[in-house]
Length: 624
Image (cartoon, rainbow, N blue to C red; front, top):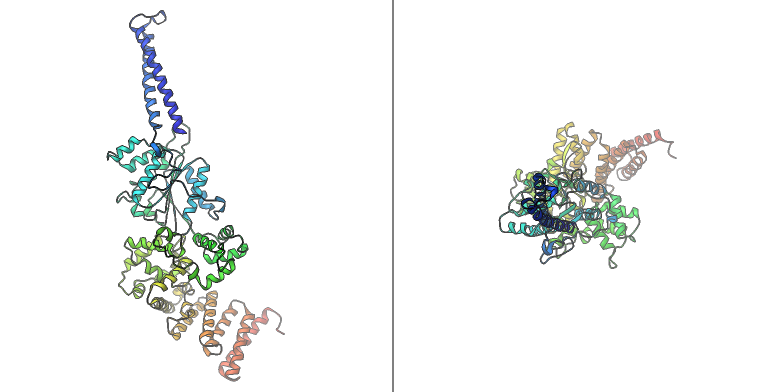
């Protein structure tokens, strides 16, 4: 519509130019031969002549400008909804904005940036499956409703990107002659494209799934230098009229690369995290409304970690009439028992990157492949190794070159290990929003629960000796506990961080340490926690130890009785006197039956029970 208006103005200017040209003849004739009475003064005649000549020049230039601005760009002028041979459509994917849950803050931030880019462009980043494409498509729908022209480019390779961005520039009014000059080598093609985008107004350009950032180019150009296809110049348009606010365009990129160093100082990097439990539950209810209640959906959403890809995969499963599990709770129970056959199953077509992106089992493997292509061959084994720790922040001090070397049985340099950690963090595989953070005074690494579980499954399938990997983690934990025990008070913060991981030494079906060593390690850590007054952390540890002793040693074994007494002692410290009394009473009955009433252990158990009962009586009336 804008180009048509300019064409009409250009035609009008050309007509006015012709009329002025016609008038110049009589004026010239009057000035040179027969002069009428009203212009006997030569200054009047020459003033009229000069004005008409100047008007002719101005109208001529205006006509050429308007004709150039309205120049047809061939069959590619209307490209937003068209698909040309060999190229995908420039139309954004369809979304229902009302069903995009939990992304309101990010969408509001991007909408503000769309209205006033101020020399910036946006990058939606995050781990695979986090919903970057959905958020970008939602912004496109909102922008289109606000009168913006929207272009969507799906990243495949450098050549396709060049063709698509050329399409976009032509659709925004780039003269074909300018493109021909660039194709002839007289001008730089990215310069020509962006010169046109700078003067165009109210557009939104999305480059989706630009994960291979080193390949965007052209050539070896680095993105942060803004000399190639990625530039912040869409937000620098100036108003064409005085006092009129500019309506510039915005470039939005979706990528797994979260590094601000990659995108440069003009990038507004918006990192997406998992959905909240409530928002994730709403997604499940939107797509599988007959599968259960909101509370049941929230329970399943929590198990899935709020990952949009996992939510969509689960909803697809629940709505199939042939699925074994068709309710939220049934699926959740099955997931806890057999994740491998549900979300962890391999897809036979995963060699196709587009299939792999849409599969929970494979989507993160694409990021690991990318890191491998960048020279970080240890990225995959390191992520597998991190998954073997507990579902809690992992102390960075435990992740050493010796640990990884023991697992992979090849030399590992500490510098290479640090670079791989940075690479995993860059691709969002180490948690959101702050992968490297201080937790209880210790530097830690976080891992998404679902990423962790899928990598445990992958390790079991890939490794010929997965027990070696588990053993490496167990020995690193045992060594860390020994160091904490020897450190004393300065080691209390580290003991607190280690506590969620210590049950790994006891809780598995195949213990990776001799039982005596594992018990001693856990008991030593419990003593440090007791010295630090960390009763809540001790409670979880003691519960796991009692469960393990009951399973491996039996309820009447002396070590099991000791574990029961320690758990009762922690419960007393936490104020749960009634439960502590029950545990001490149970231990005393077993000792009286197996050891006799006068055995020293029996007498000690009776004293423990009496102390617990006394503590209980101080808080409530005597027991009947």
